[in-house]
Amino acid sequence: MKNINHYINSALKLLDSDNFEEAKKILDNLHNENPKNPLIIFLISQIYIKKKEYKVSITYLEKVIKIAPNKPNTKITLADLYLKIHDYTKCLSILNEIEELAQNIVAFFQLKGNYFKAIGDIENSIKNYTIALKLLRKSKLWNYNTIDTSIIDPIQKNTFRYASKSKLEHDLNQINYLIDNKNLPIYEQKQNLIKVIDNWPKELHEDKLIYLNDISFNLIKDFYNRVVYISDYKKIINEPLNKENEYNILEKKYLESRESIIVIDDFLNKEALDTLWNYCLESTIWFDSKENGGYLGAYMTDGFHHPLLINIVKNLTEKMPRIFDSKKLTQMWALKYKSDGQGTRLHADDALININFWITPDSAKNDKNNNSGIIIYDKPVPKNWNFEEYNQSDIKIKNYLKKSESRKIEIPYKQNRAVIFDSKFIHQSQKIDFKKGYVNQRINITMLFDRLIRTF
Image (cartoon, rainbow, N blue to C red; front, side, top):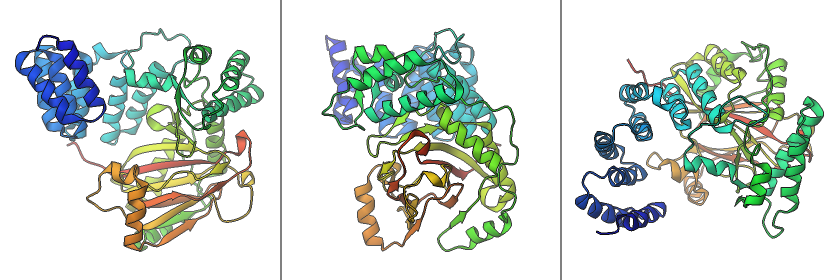
């Protein structure tokens, strides 16, 4: 093959469209003619990653490293694969090997955070996620003195170029809130955001994500989807759970219930609830925007990791050890919804235990009816379904629910109410009906727990 770049570009397009077999044919031919070309071998490894054949991909990546040993990004990819197959020793060994070379690489610290999370060391996990956050999300208003030498994956850069009108309107409302309540001097940012919103294409649905043109991007690039402000916390609340609850009884009820579902009202003490509420109102960490439902997400891996949240996890383990001991926190997020809508669609989560709790005051609801909470079906997703089938395909789930004759359990919204249930149970939001206005948006926090795999 004479024009190698032409064929590589063809293979890349096929990979992007998940046409693995045709991409592999091209790359195999290239590999036969160029057996020591590291890019070709790397691209073959990517086919097996997309097919989730991680051990095969590892063999190709190790060949790449023998040919081109000084490429930290290749080693980060390899370490991530070892983490996926639970070979924690090899994962850590590679991370330690490239530590000095990777001090400005976002993906390195994200992966290191994932490694510590996987072995149950949540404190070190958060330390590394925080470094990644500063490298990826820094702005002139936050972490101002950091030199801009971050190495960012091209896919990660999309977070700064895609927006919806509803996401930008949320950000404008948050800027107004921070000006009024925290006296932040962000008037120029406000005016630039208004210009982008005013020129938004009128024919588009407000939740539709689009690639920002250069004019819009240049107006907001210094602050959009970057950290402008994170809520202060001078006092650490070591015991955030409400001491009035009888946790031994609640634990027994969960373990003995047929559905593996319990509801805990007055979940947090008042100080903890107020702290979390202010944190979610003030902190500019709502980087993820969903087209389906128009709600926003903040994630543990990308800014949502207040120390209070970690102490909730510790407190749960102390108060309900038979449920949470020998479990690890695998993911944590907050979702912020528009005043009306369908919320999250039918799905299940990849974990053993889900704890979901609500922090927006009850006064924000439009009516007193039993709505805006959660619907849980007492049937887990089939064991042979993969994550994509039960997290991204609600049509398939609807058909399954009809056949399985599962029972629908509806739990209405209430501030400071927590619901603990089997994560594999199919669930969705009830229809949401809250008052308009920034402080009235429904916010729920989710924590997922799974089995802790010992590394010794």
